[in-house]
Length: 242
Length: 273
Image (tube, rainbow over all chains, first blue to last red; front, side, top):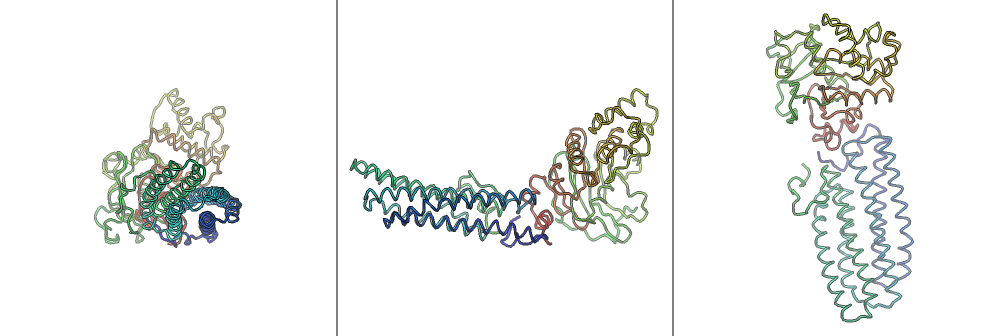
């Protein structure tokens, strides 16, 4: 059975409603923070702002703390409420999503560290076009993943699953052009490697956003589409809520 | 009892019950309707109970789950108010057929109730009670069967040194396992359990649940319970009843993680209808 966005607020136990509500609210707050971290990390590079880069690295601790808090809340709900059906799926999806958000946070902090190195090395703007393109794409993916989670929107979630393929293509093409830089100028190897780490981190963020989208499908439809080829997904079964 | 269509029953609701094709069925309920006088309790309910599996009936109070369970070994026979239509087949044979003896049916389909009800006699005599009713059995054979039944009910090690003690000297959990042993002694094929652990402490409950799991290698078990976690823990299939009708029936694995219907979801997650 598909679920709708009001479903977790209809329990006879109001306390239970509140607990599930808090899980969702805290996950969204964590999502907001992680989104900001990615944005700032990329801005640190593109605007050569190493102070901002260092703030992103410091803030990663806050992201980690939020994951621990959400995990603890989920543990409490599992132990005290023994949730079933969509409630159980919500708790599982929140645990998994928090773990992916934490990894996105780690990637953001990786981007920020590499950005600081590039700023110190006076790299100029080489590779910025690629970073800007992919970062805009994956940031949109993270935002859409969080929106689809908040609205339980499987259509939006499924779009993301397809978009991840595009990011992978953009990443491969960016890698090729960066390799050309390295071949042309051996002195560029070190800064270009840093850029490659940044692009790699962005590509991983896209993968995590894709995972978030898969959890939305699991939460709403009860279908586990992880490790499924996006082209094999049965759009009809996953289609609008019936 | 009436075999013809009774006007008190609502028209059969096509598609109201979600059936599925479980494994080889042991019991088959076909269009069963049952009313206590003017009050309908079950409406055109069809369901197949797979052999050597645990099937749980869940649902709110008054949903008809106990009524259905009792119908499976004809416990309503003596209640003149009860009106029934539809059929119940045990291994393909109608349990209400004139040639079926109720005593033999109840030997084949045993029942365990909510409150343990040992007879006021020794532990040994409780288990041997059914055997003695069945007629002459040698003492040796009887001793063997009593031991086997007590072992099957996971009680032997706790009572083997005091078989002559009163059954009432046992704890609630032990009494319930004694009652199960008494039922097993006559060699049933089906065991019906009506809230078998609701009066027991958590440890005794787990022992009963473990016993249920072990018994399904040789028996078909049907369990009625208010405790959904219990149904989720022990059953292979779960049927959700509401207002005398079968709402959803399916593998326990999916019913508790992703039920097909909103009504089921609302009940098992504790939501307002």
